Image 1 (spheres, rainbow, N blue to C red):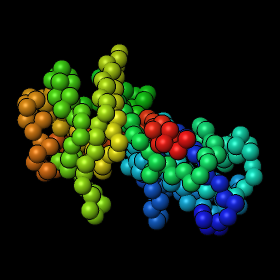
Image 2 (image 1 turned 90 degrees about the vertical axis):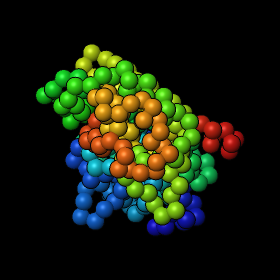
Image 3 (image 1 turned 180 degrees about the vertical axis):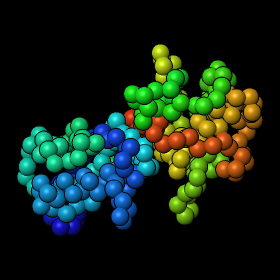
Image 4 (image 1 turned 60 degrees about the vertical axis):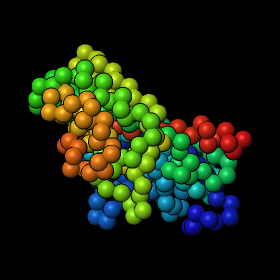
Length: 257
């Protein structure tokens, strides 16, 4: 069945998944991916072979608390029943938190206004929860890292902080919010932007740790945007501390009203 089939309707899904045993979101031959698991579940429940579009193409090992996906379906199953049926056949590391019909041709990736990611840093070695936070094996000072992160706000070219990009990619994006939260045994780094590039959050934080270790000054960190050179930034932190927290569509929905 084609997505352009007459009578097909657009649905918005909010998803939660543990990325530990996935090779990322996007379908890859011979690999277990979140996208493929959901598409298989949809086909099993509805009989329709459909492509699902995710708002963020999370990498292998990255988790999601609020991934958003869109799909076109012709079935007439009620939203609550469809959600329950999908959760009954999906593997236990993927859950549909919400599903609702959206008027028009909703596209989770194209219509997104912003995305928020969180990186979780553990302040101690953990046995329980170790797959959801990274423990830095080194001493660092959080205060200069927090100060340096102010430079991330605003519109920038993010080539220095990105692994790669699609052909013609400008690496331009606007970061609208940065938030640090220091808990009992975890530090949360939240960043909201209109779009993210490959490994961007993990490279940004890897470079901020260079500041925290005294290997880079706050001013040097701020000047990295001008270099457009990935080699000048820090390491890419491991994926298991990263979560896609939420995707915002508020402005897009206001524009369609």
